[in-house]
Amino acid sequence: MSRLTLPILLAMFLLPPAGVAQAPADSQAAAAASAFPNAKIAWIQLDQVLFTCDEGQAKFGEIQTFVDEKNKENDRLRAELEKLRNQRQVQGAKLTDDALADLDAQIEDKQTTLERFQQDTQKEIESRRLRVTTYIGKRMQAVLEKIAKEKGINAILFFNSSRDAWIDGSLNLSDDVVKYYNQIYPVAAAKAPAAAAPAKKQ
Image (cartoon, rainbow, N blue to C red; front, side, top):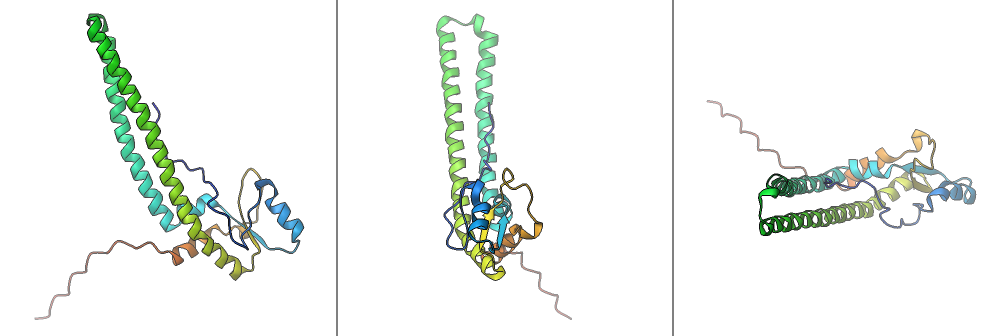
């Protein structure tokens, strides 16, 4: 039986506003360069930005906790199914036809329950991942516009390792985007325990 997973394939989150370019993957850079030969172009690693900004770490961490909890339930259902299968293998020859039919029905029902649980839970995991990706992606637009204006950048593209063989590290704005995102959308830190009051002098 398969384990439940948190998908890490990231969909494009929304159409960017003016100043943030988006085009078919194989023609992004070429189109920008040919149309605007003096344009200043930069790139970001989308997965790095989403997963390493403070808010992304917190929200995807919550999803991972959900995945871990569901995997425990998945393991429990799988163990129950294996117990029934082992029971049939060991006791099958000794059971009456009615008892064997009842045991087979239990096995089939438990198998169906496990499969439905896995399918429904995987859909829920994907739904939560998509909601978080879309949420952070929308907020990220303000960050990209701010950086583009400050640095005089005309287009920010998503790095694609299957298309981009090499890019100058100075054109990778991922770290800048994460830093700005954390500044604009700070994650509320847990309140630290109150410090003990200093002892009064006698």
